Length: 127
Image (cartoon, rainbow, N blue to C red; front, side, top):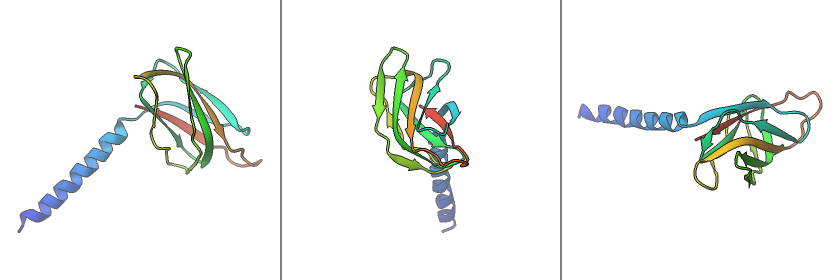
C-alpha cells in the first residue's frame, strides 16, 4: 500500500512536466504597447516561421476585434478574434493556413481605451 502515494505523486509530476513543455513550445516574437486608437501594427523582426499564433495581454486587459497576419510572401490571413483577453492571459492558438508561414507583421484591431487609462502591452507568440 505504500507504493500508491508515490504513483499519485509521479502521475502529477508527469502532467506538470507535459504542461510545462506545452508552454515552452511557444516563442515570443514581438511586444507592443498599443496606442489609444482602435488599431495598431506590430512589425515582426527576423524570419519567424510559424504554424500557429496567439496574442497575450501582458499588463492590462484588451478586447480584440480582429487580427490580420501578414506574411513575407505578400499573403495575409484575417483571423476573426472577438474576445476579451485578461492581463496575464492569451488567446487560444490560432492556426495559420499553409505550411509554416513566415510572418512579417500583425495588424491588430481592438476596442478603444478611455483617456487616462493605462495602455496594455500585447505579446505575440508563435509555434
